[in-house]
Image 1 (cartoon, rainbow, N blue to C red):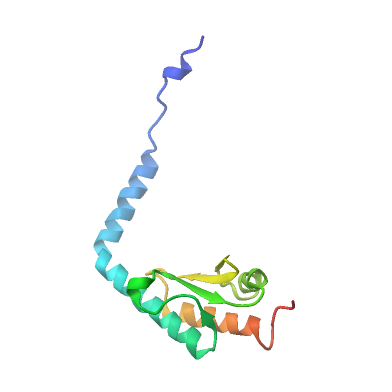
Image 2 (cartoon, rainbow, N blue to C red; image 1 turned 30 degrees about the horizontal axis):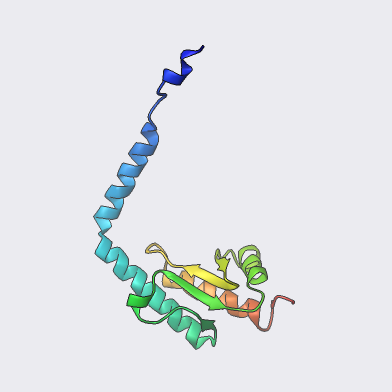
Length: 130
């Protein structure tokens, strides 16, 4: 029998340091400031989508939503791939809808680019074929 089963190994010291610095970074910004920024950006995204005539499943009241904005588009999986490949816009698909996940580090320009690319890929030039 070997004694390997009694060896505890090494703690993940690097992971512990990174986790600590990440927590300090978040604390330096403050959770209320992060929530306010995410609320502001997701509201901005909803307004952009409405102005562009795109349908969303995301409710407008903040109390009923989070940082994810769902956009109903035909062929969502194909649109997602086109957004990544052609426009360098990273989104996901769930329930056959494009999911834009807004973080406090995003900018209004990021959302302008994303919505513009979605419009481009779903209507007119660059549209994804069925």
